[in-house]
Image (cartoon, rainbow, N blue to C red):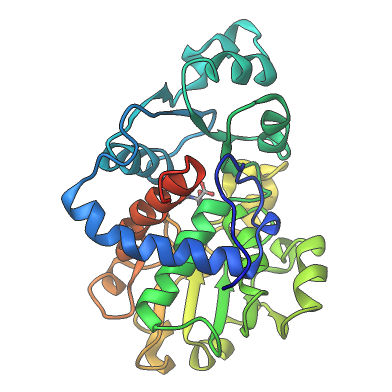
Length: 310
Ligand code: NCD
């Protein structure tokens, strides 16, 4: 018997708060949710999730809500901070201390780094970080891991490349931390000005081989997984800097001409122009499978955090 893993009542703020053993367990529970998602369940009957989204979202918010409904629970929340009392000057701490009287768990997305951690300090109920500025997006990275596992049958031994905005893209920060717990080789492809944040790089380089390049062409034939990201226009302090890197990388059939046959391409979505539509119908494209996986992974997280898996 291994050590007992405890998830009930926990926050999910950073993927760094989770061990490899815990991540593996979450992925296992998510797999078990595939059949539950198809049939529906009342595992979380009577439980309520609040989604407090202070930034735009399609997948993260709707999949949290769908996951809750599939487990028999219900949801309340706002997707537009403009209509909440935040507009009247209410701070995040008061918002969270109010909402926790109504619900059992809160999923929060906020433009500021540290916002999810702050909310968790004030809340007595679990906080799930649905994206905190450019910092982290831990539930996305769990569904990314789950997708790689499901589509490639393993994590260990793979060569994985991140392409695009590694500075402001929060999903790649969480995913880099998580992948560094496995036996992975990581290639970081970005324009000079959008290189991986230094604190992430320092941590992951101590654990796995990492190489940085601006040259996408060179790494395409080497890798098993290509994780493409959007240039995060809204996070650039200077619009002129965005113009310089806009459209830096575009994955199309020509770019993929030297790719391994079994390469898979992931993208957290939304995409702008970094993957051409012609790639969508090839076996490389797995980004819409990734969307489905978001449901089962978030079902697993909700069930674990609310103590329904015992
Ligand atoms: C990402 C995000 O919000 O960080 N989207 C998502 O949650 N699937 C990626 C992005 O906005 O580019």
